[in-house]
Image (cartoon, rainbow, N blue to C red; front, side, top):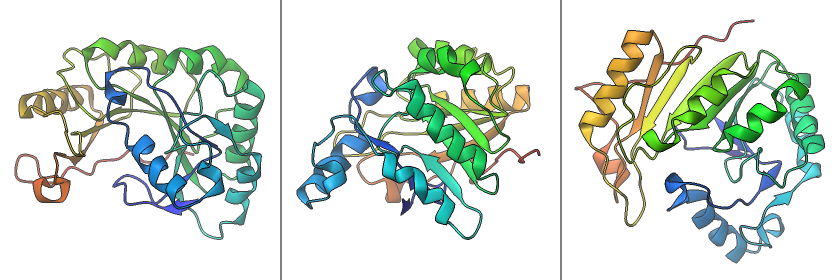
Length: 237
């Protein structure tokens, strides 16, 4: 568990760590870069580098939080990785079910596995499920997400590395958009962002603009059309 500088969450919680690349959005994976640093610092949790690891001891952590939290689940991994057993995913869901005072936001690129396991998971109101959609090629993830029983469904179009025209936003509650950051970020075209904004407006979907990205993301900031966009769904009980 750690406090987070990610604009749309308060903290992170990682019952699993490590992953592998599955699509173009993974090319400059921030979690992989951060893992190298944490491994060099001698943290046991990252002693195997970016190899997938399951951490049952982490399941106890949410029970210790005294006040309600907004939590990004598995910022350093993907809960729906093919090597994470369904039984462990169900344990993670049980923890989230047991702690309705917290909002847990889960994000995956493996929408096929998410959909496969959907009926075997308990979707309490506080679990927000999202898929990463970096370009049109992986837009099928949106349709997979829409078929799940998650109460709140969201898209993370970050890093946005291409246009995503004609998204089917039926059943989607929230879209996050952001550019790539790091040493050699791929550029994000403003027209791609504005098109997604227009699609969200037309579908009455909340829009959150996270950052322009670039080698110096603090300098480029997060202003779009002379304002910041921090829209977010209202949690329905």
